[in-house]
Length: 138
Image (spheres, one colour):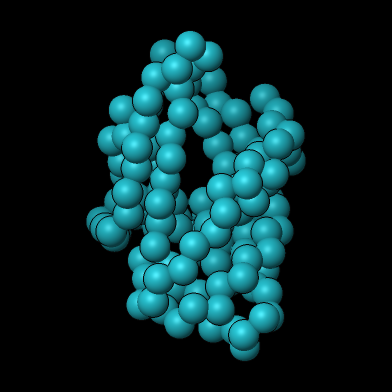
């Protein structure tokens, strides 16, 4: 989930399975998941000896976010989750739990250099995302 305004009201949801088949949605606490949202993004998935790996490429043009001055960082909310359906297991980034009402109140802060105006391409290093999910808990 990406709460690009970090206002805990709405988030973009991007999901993929090990084969790279994708789903996207908007999420709000009031209405839940809205899978009628459809945007352009790419996924690649592969099975590995340790499970699987998925690469997601989400263009900034597919998101809404506040525009910043050059060099100014945005604060986004992020929740990373891995779901294993055959074991009914869900693993989320540290701190997110179903024991607390409201998912968006549990997002972790992520500093993003989203200085590109909506509609222009930019990128974020995968190592920044790897650092965001370095400590996962069950």
